Amino acid sequence: MKPKTPKTYHHGDLKNAASAMAESLLAETGIEALTLREVARRVGVSHAALYRHYPDRGALLADVACSGFERLQVALARAEKSAPAGDAVAALRALLDAYIGFAKRNTPLFRLMFGAEVAARERYPELAKATDGSFARMAAVIERAREGGSLRAGIETRAVAAGAFAMAHGLAVLIMNGLLRAGGMKETAREVLVEQAFQCLWLGVGARPGGSAVGV
Image 1 (cartoon, rainbow, N blue to C red):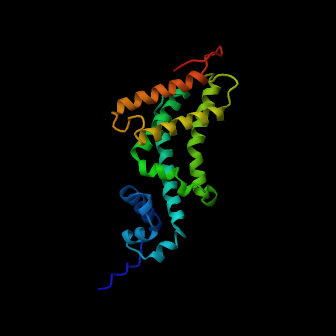
Image 2 (cartoon, rainbow, N blue to C red):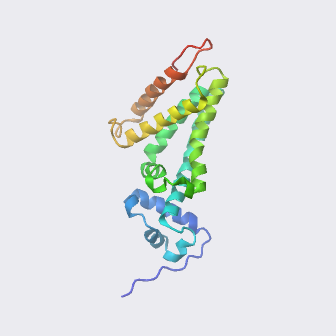
Image 3 (spheres, rainbow, N blue to C red):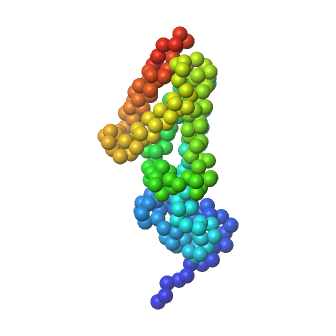
C-alpha cells in the first residue's frame, strides 16, 4: 500500500507552524535528525510546500535560532525591568542571571543559536540582527553604569560588555555541560555561583566615586 501523500496545507501560517515544529523536533531528536522532510511530514504538508518558505535546511534552522534570540531578548528585558530603578549594576547582574537561566531552560535551542549550523550570519540578515540584541542590551546597561559613576575610569563600555557577555555565555555552557557539577544544582546554588562570578567581574571594573575598584 502506497503511503498517503501529505495533504495540501491551506492555513496561512505554515512558516510559523514549521518553525515551531522544528524547535519541537530539535528538543526531541537533536539537530542531526532535524530535516525539512521530517518537519513537512509532522506538519502535514508536502516537502515542496515547505520549500516555498525555506529554500534549504539552513534557512529553517536560522529561523528557529532567530526565534530563540527574540525570546532571549524578552527574558533579558524582563530581568532588566525587575532591577531597582536607576541601579544599572543590579540591572547588569539581573541580565547575566537571565541569560544563564534561559540557556538552562532551553538547552537544545541555545546550542543551535550559537552552533555551527547557523554560524554564517551573512546568509541570514534577520538572525544577525537578532543576535546583536543581547550584546547591545548589556552594553547599554553598562553605559548607564558609567554615566552613574559606577564604572572605573578608562575602561571602555564595549570591553566590559564583551567580558560580561563572555562570562555569562561561558557559565551557561559549563552549566549545560555539567562541567561545574551544576547540572543538578538547586536554583539557589546556581544563583550563588552567578553572584560570585559577577562580583569577580565587578571587582575589576567597578569604581567608587573616587576611582578605586569596588565589589557589589
